Length: 541
Image (cartoon, rainbow, N blue to C red; front, top):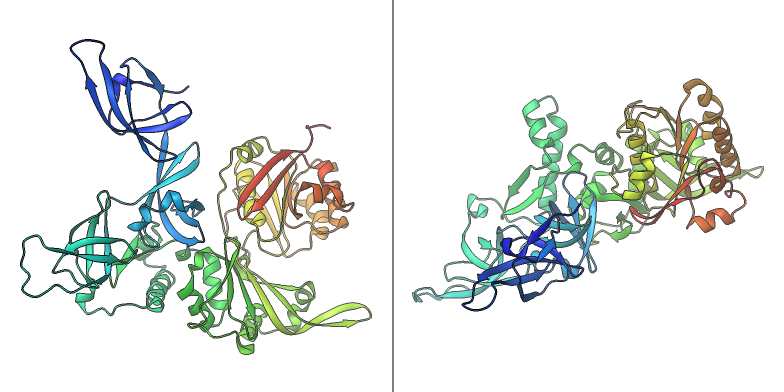
């Protein structure tokens, strides 16, 4: 039941709904004229659309209060007109358009903290901290002898914002600004005065790398480990910038990347992107390194990193095969190499065919490295599906995060008490390293890694007696038939399949049965974006 507020109880900062819009009270005044009834004069700001309006109200007027959730998040990066902010607890990325962030980003750099406001679960605005410290990137030197009291000059901050500062302020100084007024407050401590060099982008990346390595080297040191694993720890360095120690500190996948990649490519990625956000890396001989952030492909700066060489590609193959191509030939024929931490190394090159069958792949010249990530999905329809779980298929095109969503669903189903058998043929779901799961798949999950799904269906249903079977990337009619057989046995299923949408799935004769024995379908249309949770048919039909 909604709470209500009387106009007579208006105070600054109260947020309420009126005529389908949400307003917050900027200012108010109770007026009692000599003649006539008392009223309340207000200045209101439209929370969602922006803009202010002045209105008067009868003190007895009643309005439903609007509950605005405010969450501290980290500004990650921009891509065109979209700006991405990361939840500091779940590491989920939330995009906002330019209109919602323009004012705040005058005072916030990448990796800086902001406050994001949500209404009914949807983000609508971003606020910078009340006080920030930023570096001056351009200002004219003060004129010697100009001692006029209060004299100022224009200065440009590293964000591009321009303000007036005292004459004694110089370039590279770090100053404190009140973001509510946009005015200069004081000069902050300038770390460059302590004989630190002004960093290039590469220097900053290397400094972050050193802290990341400390997490590995000092695991036995309880104090160090506790300090570095705290998600809220920030390290201020060099010219007053901040960088946040985030998921990369404890993420097995990123540790594995450092071992898998040549040092030259690893350092290049470290200087160009946030490793904990990269989902895919593509290496092509003679081409620049390409990587994916939230489904958007980018190339590294060619001025900072050379084109991929044959030797660098051979290094990746050697690490993925542990220097034994022969021992991994069965994987090569399948077109990929499984690696620790759930990383999958897709390969393409010259195939060798004998008697109509592919026997091996040589002269590998193209590699696609896919890095699994853990994420928590918040969606009302998904929550209801998990609460009343039944046979479910997750449908999406490649690269939209269906495996990540499946992993989160497995964890939640398992934690609800379902004995869950995870058939992880490629090791991507569990990120298994020496039999231990790198990802949390719940307290009631049993994981089978590296066994072909068709074999696992036949043997493990009998021996492990699961309530639910979970598997990734169902491919071909034989696997669909095996899933149908599991349903006949009374086992519930959750699986993913490649398809553009439900119509494409149901129109294919080989996969149509999945829509017949599945009760629910989850459709992804963007990276991590659940477009629909559909009930295919009622239970029991």
